[in-house]
Every structure is written in C-alpha cells, then in structure tokens.
Image: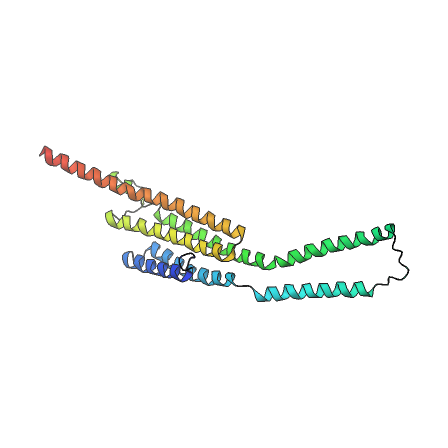
Amino acid sequence: MVYKTLSAQRVIETIDKLEARVRERFPASGLEQVAGELASTARRCGEEAERLRDPVMIIRISVYTIWLLGAAALIFVAFGLHYDGLRWEAASLVQVLEPAMNLAVLMGIGVLTLGQVETRWKRARALDYLHELRSIAHVVDMHQLTKDPYRRALPATHSSPPDHLQGALLERYLDYCTEMLSLTGKLAALFAQSCKDPEVAAGASDIEQLTTALSRKIWQKIMAFSRFDDASEDTARTLAVGV
C-alpha cells in the first residue's frame, strides 16, 4: 500500500529539499520566493488533503438529524390523520396515492440533496486549492520565460531583458523550474486521491496536463543548450584544423 498511494509527507519533504536547493543556488532571487511559496502551499495542501480524506462529522450528524426529524414528522402526520369514513375504492385510492407519491418524490430529492452536502463541501474546498496550484504553475512559467538559450547566439537589443545567468547555471535554473512544476502536479494529485470526486479528479488532471506541457516547453530550452554546445565544439575543431 505504501507504493500505491502518494504520501503527502513525502511530497512536502521533497518540496522542502527543493526549496533549500534553490535558496542555496539562487539566493535572493524570484525563483527562491516562488519555491518558498510552493513549500508553504504544500504544507497547507497536505493538511487539507488529510482532512478531506476523513468524514466531516458535523455535516454528517446534521444530515442524520434532519433525516430523523423528517421521518418522525412523517410518522406523526401519518398516525395523526383520521381515516374514519374513508372509502377504499379505486377513485378514492387514486386521490390518496397521487399526493402521497408526489410527497415521496420530494422527500427522496431532499434526502439525496442532503446526502450530497458533505461531498459538495469537500469538492469546493479541493477546487479552491487546485485553483491556487494552477496559479503557482503559471507563476513558475513566468519566471522561465526570459531564460532563453538562443540569446547566447544573438546580440542583445535595447529591449532585451537582463542576462544574469549563463551556461550550466541557466540550465540548473530551468531544471529547478521543471521540478517545481512536477511537484505542483503531485500536490494536485493528492486531492484527487483524497476526495475521489469526478470534478476534483478532472481538475487535478487538468493541472497535471498543464504542468507537463509547461515542463516540456522548458525541456526544449534545456535541449537547445546541447545543440549550442555541439555547434561551439564543431566551430572550435574547424578553427583548429584551419590553423
């Protein structure tokens, strides 16, 4: 069972280690602040996912109480009616059964609606956290937008963003972004695992698809470094041969 479900504690520990790595490698950077926010959100997500896994006793007790009071009221009304002189003929039975069936349908709808109160409450809580995780994923993507390996092969223009990272340091920066996106998807999966609600599962799946797509875009940048490095080596060999 240990290897069949995600452990919120393990995910939080991994994010804490990633935050430490980002802080040590890029101190006082925007990415460090995002990593810190992700770590803080991870703790809240872990606690909330554990709470959503357990039944909400206040809601359940309230629903059960309303059900019992409703059943008691129906029994009281049924036994309080006077049936003297009632003619048990077909026409009379139709007149009695029709409102009884309507009442039964309304009661059934009410019972089902009350039974979904806990599910809807958990769904709303989970979707709020999923919305926050989606926002974090977009913030991470914003931090990597200007980190372009192609700038090494082109001269800077007046509107070019400042270029503070080069070579392996820039690659490491982009790699940290992919790790943060992947762990954001894992936090979303915690809610799908806890709630087992179709809407929550769909929301978590959307976030995982988003983070995967953003990570793929970043890895395309990382792969571009190898092409530039190969091109530089070929140029150096050509120059050496010419000399």
